[in-house]
Image 1 (cartoon, rainbow, N blue to C red):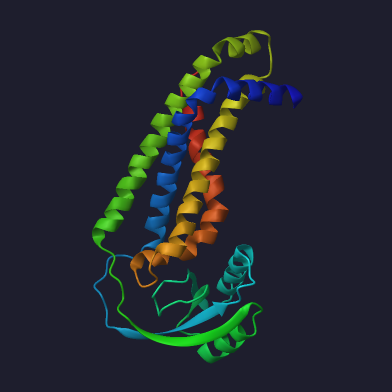
Image 2 (image 1 turned 90 degrees about the vertical axis):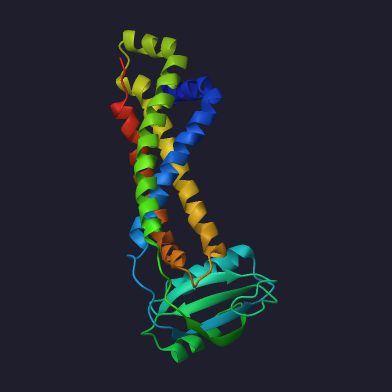
Length: 261
């Protein structure tokens, strides 16, 4: 293990100047994951249906809560089976009403008991007030171009993952060729001269998955709740759980497909 760590450290140091290609490789993984998330989460194209009434709970939060406490509270509420969506609101925002302090908007599921949910929300520590709001909702339409764009993004992203991965790995081998050949000719285990390439690929995949998760998390704050794109936000736990192993596997493909001697 010590020899592997030493070889991997030497390999990474030799390729520090290739950080730009590594970052582009990671971005291509992000594109694949985002496109897959869009295809998975966006509903099929349908005509807009009739307007309906929706009840919301606006939770005003104590100023003593830290950002970490607020995030923890939001995830705790979102895990309740009767809750459909939780979003953040900050002072100065005006939807669903003018916001004066940090708040959370909780959307119950249609089949839930709103009175029981409201009573449960009022008992939470750090919640200073719970306002019940009603709004009219017109079902959002997902244009067919959105799904077409997601398919195109997926195909382009897969191509870039392979193209950029093979290119980055080829240049990485060239920068480390002397050390690589020395290890091979000395009869060292393939783990020492192939393992660092696998480590580089896994790093690119994990970096891309992290950017994917960051993009969805930012979307949770800035995507309006009444748009079709908001339907992607409940997929954030899936992205955290499946995005990282899938990203690592995607980035490993060029390792096995790239030519090597």
